[in-house]
Image (cartoon, rainbow over all chains, first blue to last red):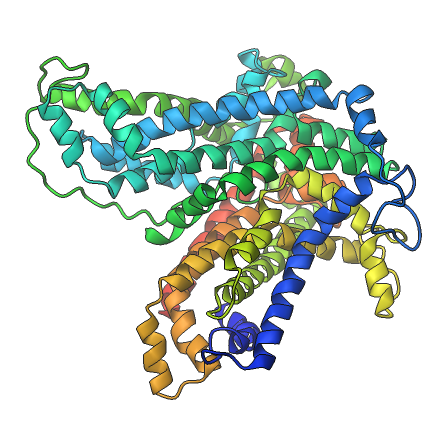
Length: 294
Length: 328
């Protein structure tokens, strides 16, 4: 794979890295043209989604395709909230995502802290065992998990969606990795002062872990909000649907109502996009921390 | 539970088990501040681990083990009602899988998606990373954000958007291609084009994630290496081949493994865009598992499918690790 990549990327590189400082004008034009074209391709589907959601009924299905609404209307948004219960699904999604996020921050930070800063027998063996779990695809667990949830009476409840997300091996990894890099002296100093272990975790470790906990929180919120397969399996009553499940079911009945579906998509994507735009500093830090620092 | 790619991520597979440096630890004070002995220090560790272990053990480890047992039974809709109706059938589910054409088709489709889509997505990520990271580019932050934005969007929502973009008559894609003189293609309705269409959408959705990892990898390459290469007269292409690529090898391995694991779990895109059609051309292993398990309640059979997926992913990961080792 690597060598084909090399051939494919060679041209780009010439325009990029290798241009002498000051740059050959032609190379610079090519570089920026590629960058802008890429940005357009990345944004176009989302821009069209937004634009089509504001078009009068039927206009998104016209030939030649329209890029901009002839007249801006919010009727589809109104429709979604008044006729199709979208407000309910928004609330469901928010409840599920917020509870999972809060729990994930607490539970994973405790475990990550223990794995990095507390010494006890079997710790490293347990950690290695746990990392094996990262290669097991979650779908393997889903069938028995469904039966387990059924026997617990949690099918069709928020808890049925929430519980499997409350702790994650990935989250524990993230916190542990970060905690390893800060000095234990602070913790030991607190111990000398006679603070109990829980105090130390809560008032010394937690504040020091704040950046990575922010990353974990945003990451968990976004992936829970976007999650589809497990909520689809565990929720059957429409009143409990999260947005992605509701949207997938709406598209079955309303596939002809392009503008309506686009309005629903905008409302689903908007919250996560806003969270990302405002908090991307933390979010991106976490992604690169997880992979490269190692 | 993760959505198809990256959501149950992708994290720090490379965490080296670093032993903490020996520090003189004063006698521990026990859990809540009272004096306690060494056993109490250990107790604290387990206390902090307990919630996570309980949750992961009950809702992940246990179900994975149970799935193996389930795959050896004829668990079906009658057993969903009453467990007593399930019988142990040994490897019969697996044997049946191997004789079912639709299983082979799903496996082929999944490999198609992973082996074509995965490398394409990695190539796009590396290309974007090189562009954004190029020394002379300004507004790096802006481009990085824009390229990453598709990754954070909700897969179901954007899959619906792409469904309309792919519309043979009203879709923007065919209109754009028409301007180039290419006849309209029925992207999602033609068995030959449906999988490529899903691949293009998945590459669009996911390349930003690996791009960030590549950017971090590129930034960790010491500038002196490039200077030395320039002094030796290496041009841009040579620098890329002999400095950038080798230095990126660990990053590429990491990206390759997580991308492949994610791509093998294809589900939501075909569920939303094609329902596995046309003519089963986009039915993936996970989609088939979902249909067998949760639509027809043939859970024993579906569990066997899930395990086949697991084994495929495991083998593919090992192969990739081995290939990388040989290259070095």
